[in-house]
Length: 492
Image 1 (spheres, rainbow, N blue to C red):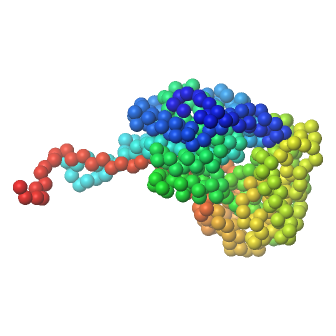
Image 2: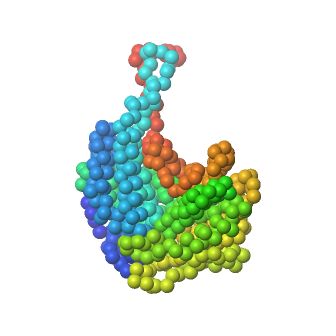
């Protein structure tokens, strides 16, 4: 905070565990509300008195590009750190860093390419009227454990591009790469107090960041229950709120997508990718496979066969395709969902248990086999609620209308996929799905230029794209009378 690395006020620390073996490999400060107050004060001074909000856009953009270059320089170190911290494979960690680089460069280009404001015609040559954008102020950022640095970058890059200061709270489970990027911001020359970080639990650090009267905006990515609490706390001071919450994302496969062997193999492969990348710990995971009845048995049989061959292990080992869950709590939660599904009539086609220990899969690690549950229906808890684990449920349909109804039958609305060889059907179905992102014949890609966010209980606000930058701005109307005259509305 304020450009200085400090111990927590309480002096408390927390061990960071490697989920592959449950052994500690780092120690961080365990902050509380007092640390948040100090960090917000530092960010407030940096915004109200410091140079950053008044720094020319070109200079802010240049700093973001320097950060991107430093991330490229440190790609291997940060990718490894993300792998060990979150349990994902090393290749996934590397790809995450590449996406973080893209985010910083995108917002650097976006902000420097903007004009000086939108001119409003006042109907007179003597009036100059313009709508301009200004930084919103002090931003608090609360980020999740599944994509620690990527999700942080979606907040930090646009906030800095707009001229804000911030306090970020990474998940207490996976704080290390967020700490590292704050170090890179310092190295790139960001003024003291602009970037502040407090590590600690959500019920103290996160709660204080949400309610703090010195904060102008709170941006939260995480679960629905916590998101509701953040919104309630922020409402007291009427601060701006951006929430990216959970998803229960359908992946709809029409039979015509499987009419050729190549199409069938591609759809199966992408269904595996949709459900099991990062062990299913993805807000946009395609955990609901909704497949046309005529191809269901063949499709699910091949899906289950391939799911059983996914190589589980420590993410840093060569050839490993799927790492552990992030914590014992998350594994137990996954096990409970599978047990409830089986009790409600689901048929287990693959996985459903902890794997046998091995050299690359220590017994103390939080591993769980990729699981396929067939013959599921909407009333099942596992179909309704976000599992955040390597669990894929299978539902079937006969008609296009039925497919759309099933896909939309969720209180969430984050993302979904449609697989079909019929271009007209693809457009029709995509247009009817109530989800913030719809992929056609693909799953999981995102573009920095495109807004990301959801409908329903998947949240409010947008990240990435021009709307992602707009979240971190206030809009001001500047009306200038070039030839002022007395009004004389009143006597005297």
